[in-house]
Length: 369
Image 1 (tube, rainbow, N blue to C red):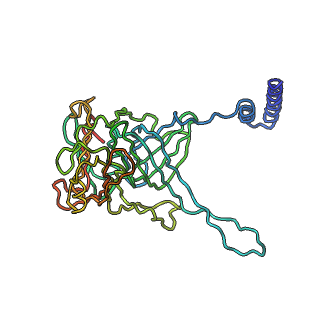
Image 2: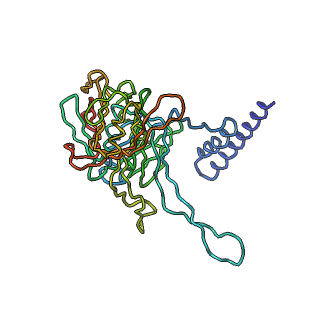
Image 3: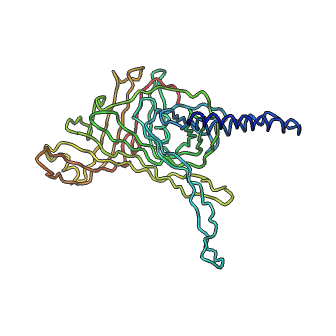
């Protein structure tokens, strides 16, 4: 019965469209317009629109030459990601006008706020994202290549586009800078990275900025690939993890100007902050005494496939914090299990040879970032 009713509705739509075509023909208008009416009315009634599916989503990125301006030549790189929350939003500003009744006055739109995060696994081919987080990179080698990232005087901005490829809808964000990079270093499993972005503007369309993105592949590091952890320049074997390792750029997202259409005019960088918490088995007072005495220390973590020299299948990533101090945090007895000491730390640059608060060295086959 439902099928018969649906077919009857479809038949009425076809008859109406034929009548509409006749009217358009008499008037001299384009009869093909009725086809669009038939499609627009009939397909949703009989079948419904297709819903976008997250597994078919796509994120691509490209460095901008000029803040919040499309690069002249599209050359985007595909990002293998877990989830994303990047979007544009605008608040509504209420009117305080008194108009002789208790009825509300029409509100107006506020400034545009482009912001959100992208979560992904720590990967051997995420160099452009690392450059966006650190600000500075130097590449050496003739293949494989060594990319050394340090805290830069300024940050690059990215074009980020998320595509709902199954329904051909694309949301392009310009002027995106990394406000924070977060990473938890664990003994097992993929190492999840979170990148918090602030951007300038959103553009929505039905065609991608670049229809042929470059895919460098997915080569994800995991806890078993940590070849070395050094604390204070020496290998240490009792560390169970580094929680909440973060690099914060403290962007100023408040810069809106008159005549700027509600978009951010710039995103000035603030002072960098690098922090985290070292968790280790409580075996002696060595680490705790460093915290009590504000003794300067350092941390280095090296992930590597194979020999780690950078050829295909032998990629590596070194994360190095050359100067830090721990905050005293005594171990506690929370039950009959083994005891751990958890020491929050903050990094800084004073006189280290690397001349940076934090450094990353990525070795892979990627010639240019």
